[in-house]
Length: 367
Figure 1 (cartoon, helix red, strand yellow):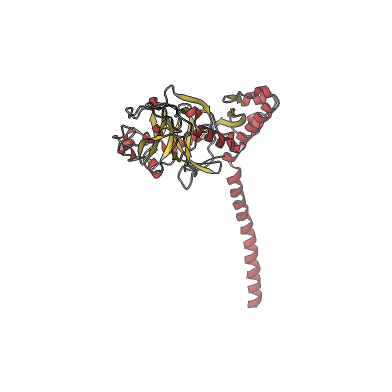
Figure 2: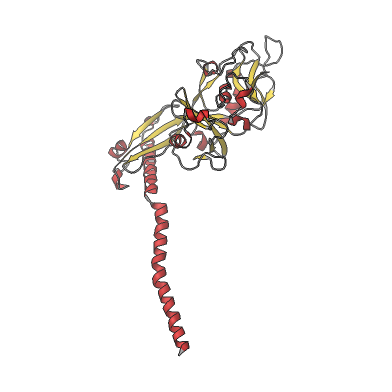
């Protein structure tokens, strides 16, 4: 009798397990499905639809391709009216508008979607960086590292800053967001192979000390060759930029971007290197008032990298010397010397934010 009851109890427990377990399993499966196909995912699919439609729109008429170094905007309304896209309500249960910015970067097209809905707005990389790191004047007095407004640009300053980016299989750091909303990136490490800034015969010295003209320099040629080796999938993200090639007199020690840049710029470059201002502007020390001040090493994330490196800025006092930067100070060196150098690129701040918090272990990602 007891054995029979035990068998009944066992069958009852199994039945109850099945009855209770199946609904629980269904709930878990539905929850997981919602994680991957919830509202956020649906909006992302809408962004993808916009890009796909814009690609077809451009492909069908090559005259629509923007000129190199420029961009155009294609509205969702245009894509709908031209038959490349259904009404947005066909894709998502929300009131939305949208557009795609098409950039021609070095002959390669980059498509950047933007969706604005009642319950969603596309988040750009520049938006996310501003949200994560924007600081105030009060923060500067407390030496808090972050993103500070300077003359219409937003510059990363301070010792501890979350400005790491993963792009093209390489780690970069964000120097600033410029007045056009573009991101100036510097490679986190210098190039392993040192190089000479220039090795030409110099008529002034009657020696092969090099000529300190950036446009004709060996370093400029080296950077252009390096850009040529980039994969196309990475090149399409790189936008043309101005390079500061202003020459300084040795008496011009002020932290003054107009000396490094001003009218002395080389336009439409895709790969360059740092200028003197990149280093000193990153310091939050109020005593960092000259390019050779030891105070500029304080509250400055650049001090994590102390290699002596070439800059784009040459001496205005002669034809053969160039400014380097190392150990928190600027120095003058003959152009035919050998030093490390950094890669500098620009990417659009309209790149969609995908992931990351900007730390070394969790960098922002450009895909």
